[in-house]
Length: 370
Image 1 (spheres, rainbow, N blue to C red):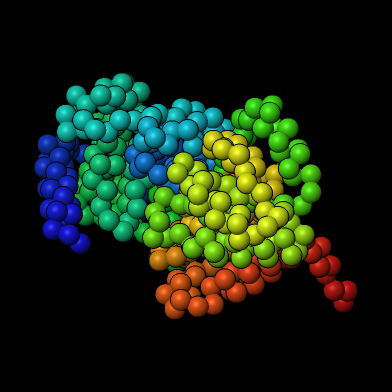
Image 2: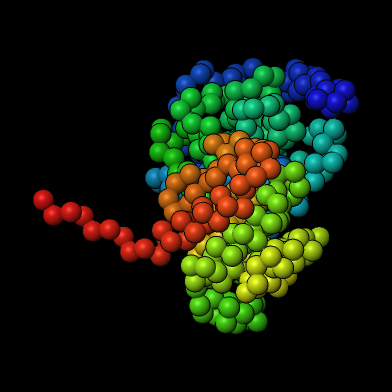
């Protein structure tokens, strides 16, 4: 870790310690393993600027709305850049786009006063266990001065919580661990699957879907936020050729600045098609209509899973067990060894894509008569 990153980390840890002293109140702490009363009004806090991180909070929304009467009112606070990912979600009563740039002002920071007036009885700091998230913990404590604040048991941010939850020992999957934060409220009943709203698309895009998905097709998404975690475009071209070989037309999607990347894939797979520019809802609708997505580990991978499209996630230099969704109809594949070896990547991708697409088209096997 560079020296300036270490310095930033230590500054944040010091901030957490100072804030825990300044914001300390007697009687807030709850004993480990305590079962909390059912919340009436709850706030989920995840001020991360990645779409995938916003979508990973949807299992918590679904879990809370599945609680028996009284069903709580559920608000979720997210980074302003990704509020669009949760806006309109059927299990979110309110999606709050938060600007965290002046959080150093504490209770006087923009937006904090309005949130304190909401009088939440429970606030959940939806951070993870691998590193202390000082910003998330501090927001959680500031907006809920009298609330029970739940969060991951990570020092020193746990000092800002009323009840800190230890990580599950039986899984590293982020969606499962994130939903586990609600265990003090649910007494064990937790939904771990991602979800998304009904996509809001224009009539012209709906006509595009009807036209393009009339025949069997699939989405190829070769882009991603971090270039070093993208599978090379030549491998996605091999994936597109494998799809064409089994009778599916690949539709290559792309985000801002990724048009040239998409063109590279198209050049390597004659017969594949270029998707038009899409917003989040249009991309979600296209993935759902195509009923098969091949993608890097990136926000669109989580989106595809959230809309229920069978998703083949290709991982490179990131923990697949933690960030993947390894349950039917999805499949996750770690291609790091082949990329590092510099050989066999395109052949492996072709094989995996062909098998995945074929399995989706096969009729379910009938039980054997005994």
